[in-house]
Length: 62
Image 1 (cartoon, rainbow, N blue to C red):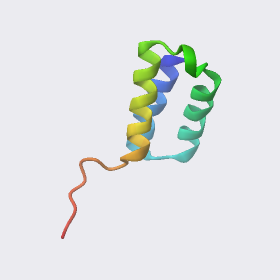
Image 2 (cartoon, rainbow, N blue to C red):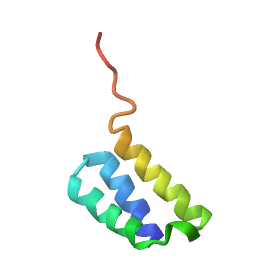
Image 3 (tube, rainbow, N blue to C red):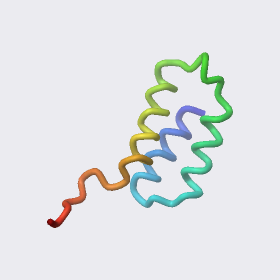
Image 4 (spheres, helix red, strand yellow):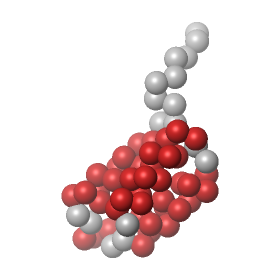
């Protein structure tokens, strides 16, 4: 469900526990990509952003 994906994304963004991401991926895979609602598309994009950028606010020491 959409709400479950949003909750998993928020939790994964805090702890980066792969099983959470796996469940989120299962939800996304169960949806028909051709007929996603705007809210589903936004949730998928948000999840992908968290996965692709795991520590967006971390300072990098140079």
